[in-house]
Image (cartoon, rainbow, N blue to C red; front, side, top):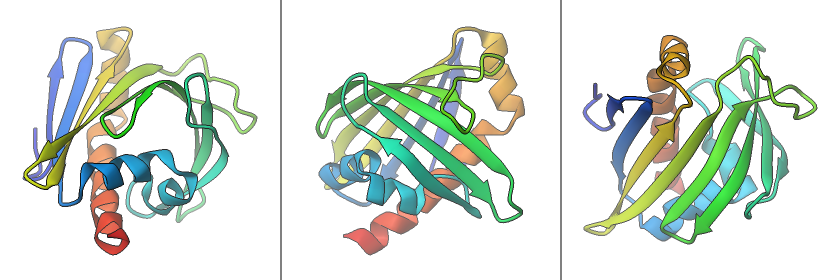
Length: 163
């Protein structure tokens, strides 16, 4: 599946997304790892993100809430495992409650982001590894691909005004 800008594919239990952004990889990496930047673009179109905790280091946590224009809330938590500036981020992404407790009935995913130089631009490759194909299918049914494409559209717009 693709939307002309973002290419997505499923390989077993993995969801892979790729997209080229017209910005240097140092900047793209920075807007993924700094709270003031992330709050300005994270989430699909029409949603805002509030960061409640963000400690970007191995074993650090990012706890956040996305809110729709209608007031719907989606809480999440990221636990960072590896950071190689400006090349790679590895983290576990989980659904959480307001207090940051992991929702055990929802999928947890190990995400590896690669930031590659691409002729002065950045090729972002996301590999989301799910524990099972069933859990991957659960988030596919929830619309994860459209949500990520919309989120990356917001990132693209934000990068245009940040450079």
